Amino acid sequence: MEILTHSYPLDRFRVVGGSSLQGDVTITGAKNSVLKLMAVTLLAKGSCTIHNVPDIADVAMMAELLERLGCAVTRDLQKQTVSIDVPETPGYRAEYELVRKLRASINVLGPLVARLGKAEVALPGGDAIGSRGLDFHTKGLVALGAEAHSEHGYIIASAPNGLKGAEITLDFPSVGATENIMTAAVLAKGVTVLDNAAREPDIVDIGNFLIAMGADIEGLGTPTITIRGVEALSAADHTAISDRIVTGTWAFAAAMTQGDISIHGARPEHLELPLEKLVSTGAVITTIPDGIRVKMDRRPSAIDVSTLPYPGFPTDLQPFVITLNAIAEGDALVTENVFEGRFMFVNELLRLGAKIRVDGHHAAITGVKQLSSAPVVASDIRAGAGLVLAGLVSDGVTFVEGAYHVDRGYPNFAEQLRALGADVTRVD
Image (cartoon, rainbow, N blue to C red; front, side, top):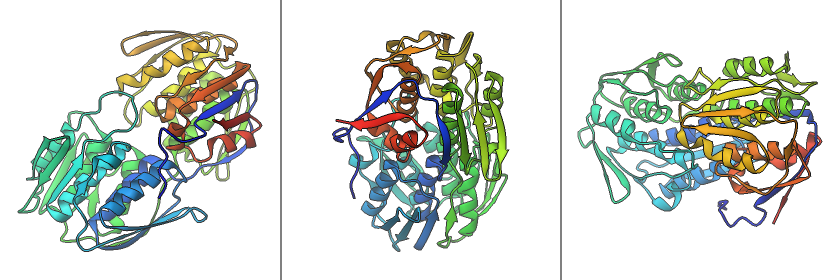
């Protein structure tokens, strides 16, 4: 299975400024859900099929990780499915060479400990957006009766006598920790009550898949999740929810380019606050039978935003609100409360002529009418997509290096932009 790496030959986007994006896009399954759903299949012997799977590099990486653990993985790009056949006894060691590329690989930890009583998972890599400690994950497993420690770059966890239900309160509603604790607790003896749990739609999606496999879970989408352990789970099929971050990306793209995009497959109930913010910029958002339409016929107005865990404004959409504010009318303040490294993206926007001052967790932005083209470098998935959109509201030609980042979260990004009328190509 081919994995996209830093040496990918067409690793730059060539973006010609001045396009107003017009047309239709269709949203596929949520990256932040599908990768975790794939990890969840480790909890049961047999074949699971996940539907609505996006054609992105991260899915290929997770598929290879599962294959290394002994699973048989089949992807059908045409049908947007991935089928995973899990053996009676999968492997328990997730090697560094794969884990370092994919943050979501940490999600095999909970299922492996629950199913096998042991796991060795390399400390993961992923996007350069700041420190994301795994203490919440290991503390949760320890509370369930496991032993867990870090050694030689691996998290090593064991529960030879099985896991036992417990009352666990997270200091922060960590999505990854909520997922790992939930997937471990479903096979624990007794009842687990997880307080201050993450509430993201992805958590609900994963929980619903677990329930389809036979788990007993209540409280999904609330701060308190109750899990009653069962003896075993069975393989099941599941359709992933649509990607709210990709939906938000196209919504902001329409607003900043003064465009008109119909976003099919969108779930507006998962993006209530971002869509409210877009309306404040002057965008007109209407519902269509299978999604939303976002239209902007003037220069956007600046908006203040603070990122917070769901249902707050998503940190993954922060690069797009900063890019919009960079060409908006007025001044804005964007506060990052989740990942401190997100503002690395600002340094590249400054190269494009944006007027931004960063002070700790705050970015003060004064909008200019148009950005100025320059070569820039993407540091993560959302920064890469944001810089491409910044190129669309710049004069001249902008080159965005690090296109492989965007491949990890957006299927056929350049092709979709061209279908909307943009002049965006991949170049060597």
